[in-house]
Length: 138
Image (tube, rainbow, N blue to C red; front, side):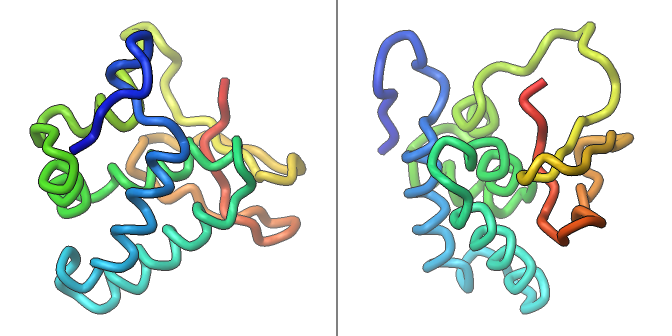
């Protein structure tokens, strides 16, 4: 069962906790995602997120872990968090209602950025070096 690491961050998981969840999900993927193509895609996304250096993976891990209903349900079962609370536990409360529209994504190598029209849009890859784009820390 998931426990917060300190009282000030009681509704957020640390990057290491997210990495542990991602590694466990990677092992149990066949029982979580029914179709082979979906499993292959999620496995690739998890692998890319886990390969990011320490301190840089949290946005990508959060986006990958909460992107699919099946993974949110798996996290709820695995951690003992209610399904409705999984998104909050992964990344904390939602931002302000006055935040700008669009999702800013960047190349981890710092040579490209763009804005997505919606949060469920695939961020794509950097046209300069092929790296998967990740959410910016705006």
